Image (cartoon, rainbow, N blue to C red; front, side, top):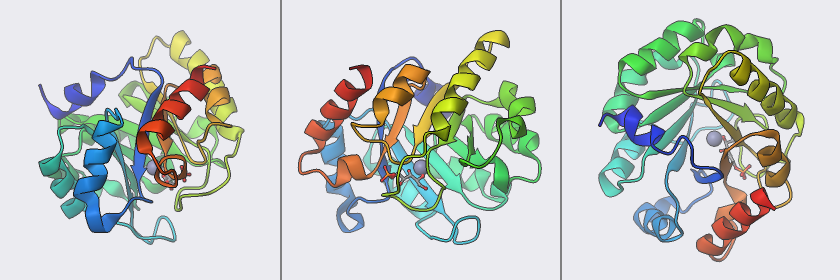
Length: 231
Ligand code: DX5
Ligand code: ZN
């Protein structure tokens, strides 16, 4: 099984809660990952920021590689970096199972998505709240996942923007009409108040930062989010 197949085993899991490794304790990543595993998490969402595409910096390949050595959980790598095609091979070698790039950051989105798949990695495209769906429509055949951002990429702890719900609804229709199979993921401000409407609209994967890491018990947080999605 290659990297892509490993994460696409989760394609039909719904709802799937993915913790965003942005607000976690980076001084003790090993324990954080262990706790998340015990909380029933099935994949990790890694937020990579370059200080250029977004006004914030996080981490790059070495952290992805370190995490891949310590966990069997598939890695959903969200690249918030300008011209990500420059680094895809290195993120693949580091252990990414899925790489999501931002449409706003790519000079040639189709070529970038093809490059990800050619590396045996699942391909995702993300769009910020202000970006129109039209920007990604020609490339949907090349996507294993579409990430509708419900905050502007860059920081955890922001307020949910419902524009993502409208995009999810439209993408469900388009996916049906064009007989495609991409996963619909939402990221930003996901909590027990906001997850239900996203799930009802047709999203199935949910990235959660504050609503897991700011809680005392990760397991309870994941249980609460899952229950709130389907309520
Ligand atoms: C934002 C990141 C998100 C974010 C989620 O740029 O892509 O993954 O950290 O954090 P919360 O859930 O706190 O909005
Ligand atoms: Zn993210």
